[in-house]
Length: 238
Ligand SMILES: Nc1ncnc2c1ncn2[C@@H]1O[C@H](COP(=O)(O)OP(=O)(O)OP(=O)(O)O)[C@@H](O)[C@H]1O
Ligand SMILES: [Mg+2]
Image (cartoon, rainbow, N blue to C red):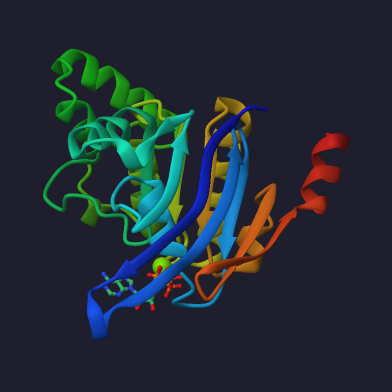
C-alpha cells in the first residue's frame, strides 16, 4: 500500500487573542491508499476540525498536509478547490441534499461544477445510483425518500466523480441501527470492491467496527491508533 495522506504536526487555532481556541495540537497521521479508517473521540476533541482540513474545506494554522506527495498547505484556494473536486468525496450526517431537486440531479451536481456534458452527467449519475442500490429512484426528491435512501443519494453524489478518498463525518448519526448497518455495508463494499479509501468519523463503536483501523482523538490529539484485528482476521479467512 502506498501513502495517500500525511499530516505532519498539524495545529489549528480558531479565533484570535483572548478568544482563541487551539482545536488541534500537532496532529501526525498517515493514511494508506485503500484503507478504511474510523475516527472516534469525545465531542470537541477535534475530529471534524481534522476532517475539514483533510477535505480542504479549511486550512491548518501550522503544519504540513501531503496528499499524494503534494503539499496542500502550499496550494492556492483555487488549487485546493480543484483537488477537492477531483479527488475527494464528502458525506455528512445531515445528508445535505438540495430539497426541491431530484435524486438524479443531486447526484449530477458535482459533474455540473466540473463542466461535464448533460449526457455524461446523466450516465454517470445513473451508474452511481445503481451502485448505492437506488436504481429507478432518480426522479424522487429527498422528501420522498427515507433517511437511509437520502444518505445513499448523498453517497452516490460523493462517488459520482470517482474520488480517491471518501470523507464521511458521522454518516450514520441521523439513522436507526438497521439503516446504519446498511450504510456501513455500502461503505465497506465501496472500499473493498472499488478501492476507495474511506475516512469516517463516528461516535458509535458498532459502526467503527466496520473499519480496518480506528483512531481515537482526545483534546486535539491522537490518543490511540489501532488496527481492527477482528476485521483483519475476518477478511483473511474470507
Ligand atoms: N469555527 C470555529 N470557531 C471556534 N471554535 C471552533 C470552531 N469550530 C470548532 N471549534 C471548537 O474546536 C473544538 C473542536 O471542534 P470539532 O468540531 O473539531 O469537534 P468534534 O470532535 O468534531 O466534536 P463532535 O463530536 O461534537 O462533532 C471544539 O471545542 C469547538 O468548540
Ligand atoms: Mg464533529
